[in-house]
Image 1 (cartoon, rainbow, N blue to C red):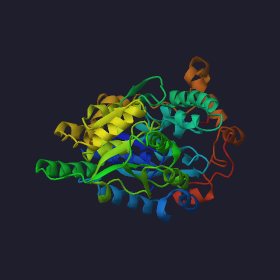
Image 2 (tube, rainbow, N blue to C red):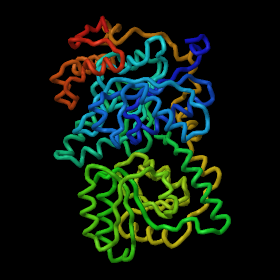
Image 3 (tube, rainbow, N blue to C red):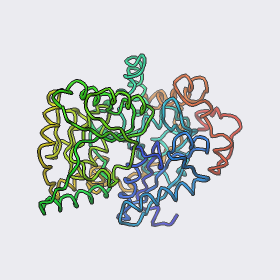
Length: 476
């Protein structure tokens, strides 16, 4: 690393998913690193999970797999290069992970902070900080890095409430989340009020939309200015086809108000575990509800739809809603805290009950979308989202020299005075609890995830640790 690089602020962004899985925590952090690195003022590294071949097959679509991390990195870069118009000036590193089939989530294995060498550790951004630290066993994030920012993406409590004994699980999870996020993050950014509250947190939508959607919107705007019919199709919804992603609410609304909505045709696009059940429920309606496999939202198939329906209340900030607005469509969505950011746009129509849903949908079908101003389009962009992130996280006030306060020793060097510091004590308790297989699996960790196994180590060039280490505070 050159002297110039050493003087630059180094931001390492850790996230819980990667392409080709087109989930929010794979796509949004990827755009974030690209736009943070764009002006060359900072050194930026994206740290993403690496799965062994068998685990890749469980999660990545269309039987797409990678023989090595370098092959996956090449795929990620090609995907992004097709969507932005500037050179990519960031690094990509991998941490060991496994896919938990019961949670439909990728979970870290071992101490993933090791992906960044100690001498390079400056600022860490944890995309989904609770998810990344539930089972963390290793260096304390606040000690390894000078400044740790958590970005809360997911309303885990809402998802858990829908499970068996959901209220009890949500109660316990709320305190677990608060515990680990408080231990490991200096600052927390919540994308909307739909997430649980955390100390030292700020609510700010730091996400933007893929530039392709804004380009589509500009073409539609030109058509409108020429008085051409820009939108020739009616109503649609796109999202992962699981009940919790808004399909339950949407089909319930359509069933209850079939008479008022007589003649309405709705197209649903998505793939997921509940696809067959959702198709069956749609067939039972008197309305015409067509169900199709999932596709990329930027596909030309979607350009001509005029109205996007999104009744979901489990999202924190819905990416597809932002994309639909960027394309110039009218969005009909629930009057919910997750949609607060979208209310500033004239094409966002909110409803608070079934009758309001019917009114908003029929009104949207009977009129043309408003033409977005340049400022409104900018608010949806990644340029604006990056500025919001820099402001919300105070990055401009924290130079590399300022943040390099004094590299505190690793996790337990202050163990002698642990009683003087509640946070250190709390972190030590978590360190101990996360260091034993029985306690880890009791709280939902993947068995054998304390250290990377032989296959993960071989793929990532790591040294295999034959027995889980039980380091003393002093050693760690």
